[in-house]
Length: 231
Length: 275
View 1 (spheres, chains in turn yellow, green):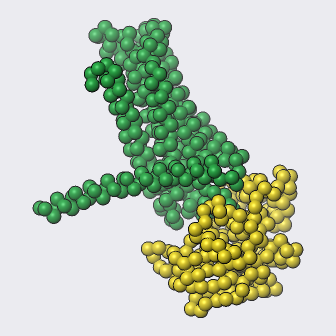
View 2 (view 1 turned 45 degrees about the vertical axis):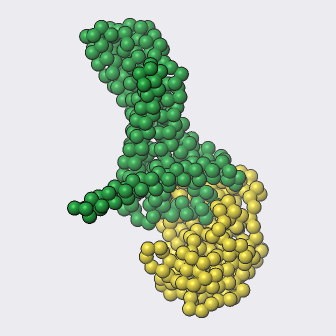
């Protein structure tokens, strides 16, 4: 591997203020330590900022104010290059969208591997094909996202979070649009990776009780009225 | 009345300030995109080359038919008008020199820039705008791919190479094609015409040619990328961003070309001791 994936041992937010500048502030002055070495369900009511919170954990959205710390290091002040070793150890799946529209499904999954020269050509191809075959996507592998069904797009989007074999997984409603069989497969992949030790921490937003049962080991409530210290 | 005047001056001041701020932001994008592409060690060079080549194909190669037609038409019009007007005053031997001054120094860079703005500036702005709306740029960040080095820089590099090549091609086709078209109407000696062009050629022309086209290419693609990246959430913003990219690119390119032309002719006048 030519890329460096920094291990992630702690995630913490201090006096964080989340929301959108010029519109509504979702939460103010929140402090929390995220549970580690757990498969965590992030739960909370509608509009509480779950998706925003996950994006912030993945380093994709900065809080309006306050600090986000990974391994006690202040993320907001890091440049793209400084944050990269952490980012490569975080797999993130969007709730909607996020696939590169001018690349085929196969190329979408290959992109992070090729860009970071993670493996040999053969190994990259094998890894991508393994994930695609697990979800019966091989037939559609050369189609672009616009030419496949919504569930296939969603599956590729979720699978892309796994492709660099990160220690941290952040999934925003991963089961929306997936059929029962694929939901079960997704659950098995997560559990197998956790068992093998390649996946250490997962933060999942989902309402699908069937998917979450026997999967999550901790409920992290976005109840911003209280300070949380679950670590 | 005084209040009206104050408001008017205030508006002008704000307008100028916004132009400076906009220019600063565009230059900053150019700086960070180039820096991230050059210094970011983790980037996939092969991927960047692939995107650059694709940009050259779309901007350069696919524009050749349109550029060819425009070049032949422009070259033909200039030679026909020049040879006709100049023959009245007995100066048809300077048709080649006029060709050099008008086509190579002025029209080729400007026409090429306008064609590239119309074809590729709009395409880049709308493509990036749609990528923003579909969260593709954020997705790239989540995969550790720097959008500045993977999206902006290759388009910029590919765009600049295309603009320089297209302007060279335009000049060549305008000179040769224009002459051929003119030959159908009235006879002028090719060797005479060519000698006239070669004699009027100066070393400064090379510098001017590269300066104009490199900067025009840079302006078009940085402005288009900037406007595309400004789109936030709604697809409605995409056509607005595209329109702004076209308008701003045209304004900046024309002013830059005009500025260089003025500098060039001031230096010419100085050489002739007129200034």
